[in-house]
Image (tube, rainbow, N blue to C red; front, side, top):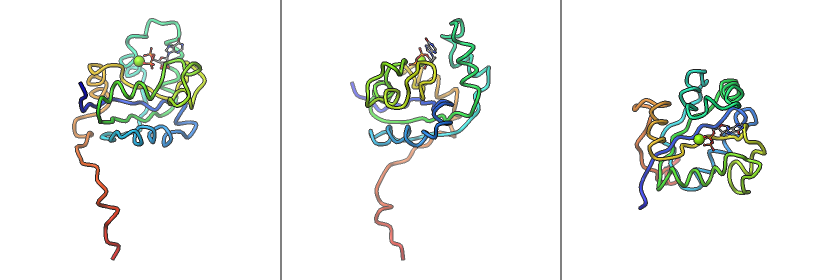
Length: 154
Ligand code: IDP
Ligand code: MG
């Protein structure tokens, strides 16, 4: 069943440092998703431990936390048809070295740990993760339309 959904993206420090914020967001706009929330923030250690709770016991966690808290990130909520599943397809597999061309990770990274972007992995996770990064009044309801293209310049 197709559904209007929201999901969370995090543009990771490597992408921010490399000047890829716009390129990454463009992929989702061109696919037809609507941006309904967006902010730059510094992820603290506590937030990292909460966000990556499923990975805290892994040997690579200390490096992941150091990386994710090292520089600002950009959090984006997008909305559209089957947003969670379709977004994961656009993002590509975790190991960017193996990610197909055409995916964000396949096109912009060659690393598992510095893989440009996070995307929620299920509808339930998406709801939790959006609530972790955004207050309700930081998310917006609006219609996309082309009326501005016809605005009078007089
Ligand atoms: P995902 O980002 O594709 O959902 P997760 O398994 O949830 O993948 O892992 C979260 C993040 O942790 C990855 O995007 C990557 O940055 C990092 N990570 C996952 N597995 C490894 C690993 O084996 N080595 C180093 N970093 C990893
Ligand atoms: Mg994940």
